[in-house]
Image 1 (cartoon, helix red, strand yellow):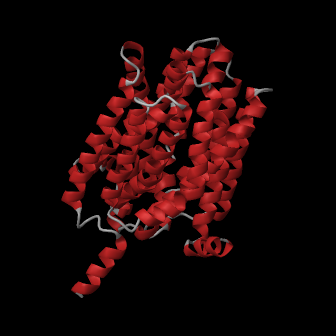
Image 2 (cartoon, one colour):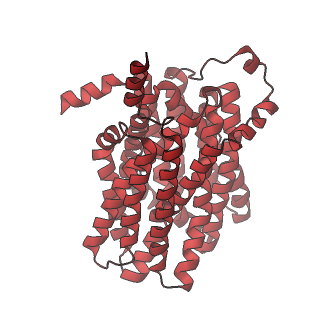
Image 3 (cartoon, helix red, strand yellow):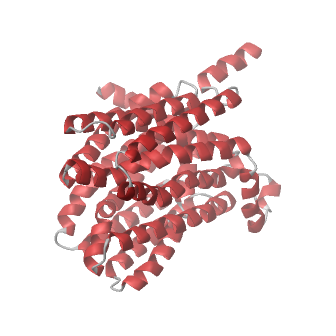
Length: 416
């Protein structure tokens, strides 16, 4: 086992592992806050979940705008500066959210924080794609995902203990982790932006933003984004709708739901890298269809089963799909992008996450409140089937372009 870990470590450049470690530290800070954010809002400002949900929606929409801005700036000026800006601003915004005492001010803060704290997201993803060769990117994103899930195991535990005494202390701890991460990035991680032509160097910033038109006109990529949106409308229900459904329909307490998420995170930590290594050798769009098939089975089960043991079974099936879909999906988005437009392409991929995050919970809540609650999971199964068809269609159209790297190399050798 130790030999396997050592071998895996040496397969990747050292700067990648520094990026993984720094991201892990930053994610611990974020996961100390995220599970308790709604509790903080409702308790401090004495409001209901409606207002908390509106604030979460503001964060999501303004974050999307920030990501699109950040994608263009990342392509124009580089990755490292954007990452550092995002980390420092994240630290300042965390302390601000812990100190603000008026709900009206918090709404304004949500717009500013969502906008500016998300500008670095495309730079983070672009760094991974810059550092790793194409054949290692899916595995690399898988490793980043393992680090993120480890943080989800550690962060909420610390956050829960600290929040029971002081929410402000939680925000301060998050700020400290961001500053530590910024220091590591500043001292150790170099600029990773690929070399550009002289024409690209003299390109005006406005022209860089106009480059989003090229992204929008990339029809296969837009089809990929739309298909991913449909798939993510289903997947993201695990983090909001499922808890309410299990509580109201089956009487599962919050601790029971929390155990399901902990089980999901633990399985990802144990198996993510192994799964990604297996699927990275196969056609990626077919693997996305396969992962979405696991979503279809797992989420649909909640419409028909009623025991906690079967709830666990369903979450394990979903987790298998998750381990396939998330890293492969990010790698495919990076593979669509030309080197000089990687930030903008990956920012556009943020649409696939942001819009379902903003729309999905409200749409599912409408169904839960007005129809048979099991209908949510039947619709989830239908949407998954639509996404599967979309991925299969894209595979048929882009089969040669998206061959696994080992197959592409063999074919190139045969031709030469």
